[in-house]
Length: 69
Image (cartoon, rainbow, N blue to C red; front, top):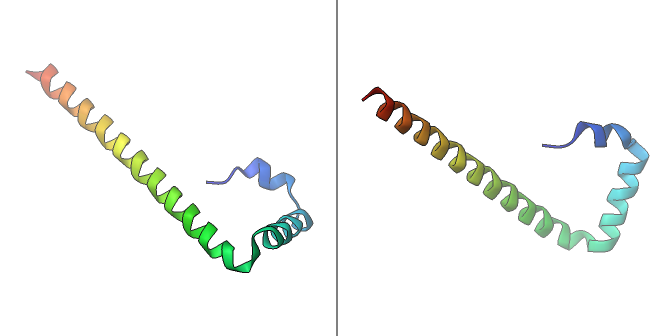
């Protein structure tokens, strides 16, 4: 998720300038690799977040079951 406050402060011109600088620094061939790596990182983060949420829910249900007994 992006921070809406940060995007609210950046105008179209600033975003275009940033994109041009990134293109100049990394070149057109490296950008797909960077985006692929970024996508993998986001996917791993979401998987870890889902695992933590599932473990918390399982622990809560175990606690509820033991409290009922």
